[in-house]
Length: 184
Image (cartoon, rainbow, N blue to C red; front, side):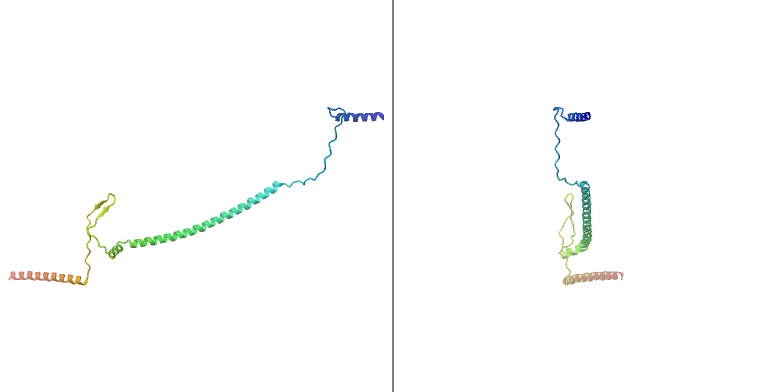
């Protein structure tokens, strides 16, 4: 038994020698200190999935809100466009009415009537100005005011007309007498 005990101790010694540091033969290395106990946090929840789900939800809500804003802006633009088209139609109708009024006022009969009301008279010798070279075509003469018909003026014309008719009847009587006397 002693041999077995010696062999066992020999083996221990050789194992201990193997454990000794190579620089210090025969010295055993110290045991590492035992770790102290401390409170450990629970394992972290996988934040990757939570962040992804929250970002997808925010993206979806943001997209829906932007669609709502765009739709509202388009509807507002549609109402504005309708109002502007109605205003344009109204202004077109007003322009057409004004053009018709201008055409009525610019008619030659209407212009002549308004000119007579202002005391203007038609010219007997018109003159024209050629815009291309500034040359005056024709001879301008002042227009004469036509005689206004009055009761006295009409009586004067009637007496002149009657004297002309009596002169013409006398000359025809004279001419008939001369022909009758010659034939006898």
